[in-house]
Amino acid sequence: MVVKSVFDKLGYSPLSVNLGEVELAKELSVQEKEDITKELENYGFAIIDDKRSRLIIKIKALIVELVHQQNNDIKTNLSTHLSKLLNHDYNYLSNLFSEVEGTTIEKYFIAQKIERVKELLVYDELSLSEIAFQLNYSSIGHLSNQFKKVTGLTPRHFKDVKLNKRKPLDEV
Image 1 (tube, one colour):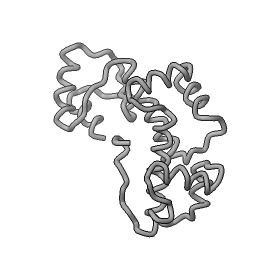
Image 2 (tube, rainbow, N blue to C red):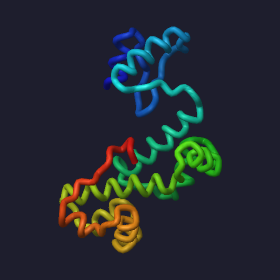
Image 3 (cartoon, one colour):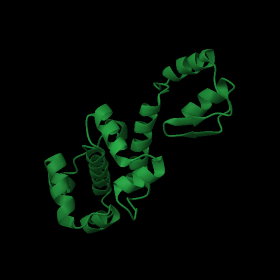
Image 4 (cartoon, one colour):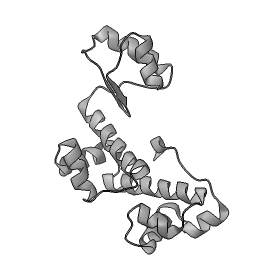
């Protein structure tokens, strides 16, 4: 909403504003980009104008959406899902992501899933088996092992002490 309001305030009505992406009806001049950049920086935002960075942002946004909004409800594996949606070979996406982010797409995906598990544990509305099912884990044991590997705690211990060790999504 902040990004849309900045564009509207400066007289550029965006066609769409999504996570990490603004679509405009016309190409911006260098001066227009500078004006928008200055205004966005006042709110802690920056313009990313290279294709590689935009692709990384799209990968992250798709993973976040998959884990946090769609509850990991895909019928194919992650690599096929990303390749299909981004129209790139998964090896290219994987190598680019690892080079830029210093971690693999799979580790990022697992980190997002664990953050979602933490969130659901803190809400205390679902059982561990329901969480495992919702996030497409093969078993409670698999979820528990992965959770302990990432956090150092079992889900039960995390839930019992109500640790609030959640990270903002942009820090995962």
